[in-house]
Length: 359
Image (cartoon, rainbow, N blue to C red):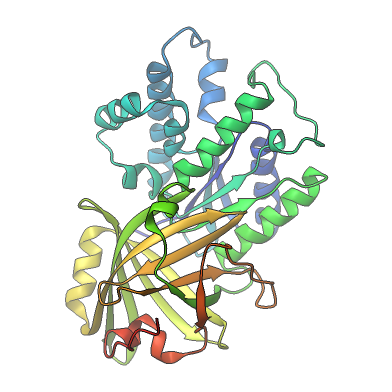
């Protein structure tokens, strides 16, 4: 059964998620996509008459059950072609935003799910930044959205932290108008879906070993990755196991070089059984392990890879919408040099030969 990609629109109150959902459905439908949508479950629960006087844990449990039911129904749909997508107005990981640490652990136990299962069941997450974060923009409350500006800012920040670590996380900033914001969102979603082509536009930098204590204080999440390179009938592909504490997602990737910065990339989510079946079906040419620190900083999602064989240096990668986009790196990152076009620093090359440290 072919799996339909599932994406989430998240962010603080006043980010425009509900209208963005309708905008994306219309725009992608015009591109020939079959678009399945899941409206915000919290709003549905409140409109059904569920009491606001219940505890936060009770409320988030009710929301999670409704969200799971809706997603499970759509997960049964089989994609007839490549042009289908599921878009959710918020996702399961949003429960983390509204619960303290103790209650969050409780709801994970009730649902029987881990952080990886709550966050990475979605192929991509787009954070629509709340208007509450911009003083010169109007922020409105209402019957459903009752948070004041300060509360909305806090929710927006917690949302950023909750979803950080997803394999494809993008920040959609506030704009002078929502139309401008939705146009940028559409560009990002189309890039993720491979419209008009599935391209990976990436810059890579060799950096000095980062300050892990500093990273832990920022909007940053760590994940462990095992990458295995295989060939079958002259076809090259990569299998990736991504997660931590025994909880993983599995991805197959095939790439075709277009330029030093741009590659055509096709990613396919696999079940655990599919992953091990494909692993046994090909000839292994290389294997590599790394710790990835996913950093959302100043509206950009950076990926910092730390390898067990280097003690003084690491990689930083950033994906772009256009290869001519300016790249601004965090000021606390110390760049040794750019290695975007250096084949010796490809992960597949590191499996064969490890360059000496430059620091």
